[in-house]
Image (cartoon, rainbow over all chains, first blue to last red; front, side):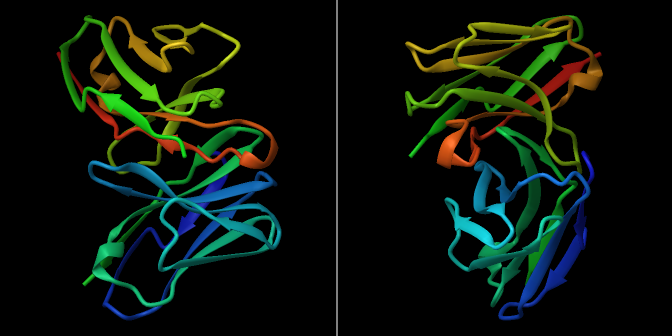
Length: 110
Length: 115
């Protein structure tokens, strides 16, 4: 998985609780991305980062925030989890235009 | 923004047959088109990509074709094997500049290769 780890790999939480997912890379790539994958929708971009402290919104950013304080880590936070955020979350890293994906985090919000 | 449509949603073939998956995109400015293979429980893996200055690209049993005029691109897998069974995704983006490589994905195709 191209030097990308995601943690946790599985998480079950309750509605209204905060959740933080972590993406860690060892490739020193500038670009990092968070996607969610849902049946029938493919992968949809949540947020992305083009450098330390440089982030921007993607297609489905409502209810999510991100932070990148160092090159290797990109955090995705659900401030108050909802059932609609039950999904599989993938982190990707990019070098120019080519992206490589991590193993994913399966999140269930009850 | 970009919209990518992928067909078919499921594809079943016999081992040794060819498989073709097609995608159309809406933004004529898009110039980079990767294909990903996703096995159960794993993240998507890049298998081949094509840029808008090229009409076709091959890598062993896999090939991708691009028709910029019609705004569609296709994945061709020849001599399919059971290990080709997976979900395949196409994607499109405007590479370079301030697009930051943001990919728009198709909905995916579940390919099943029967021995």
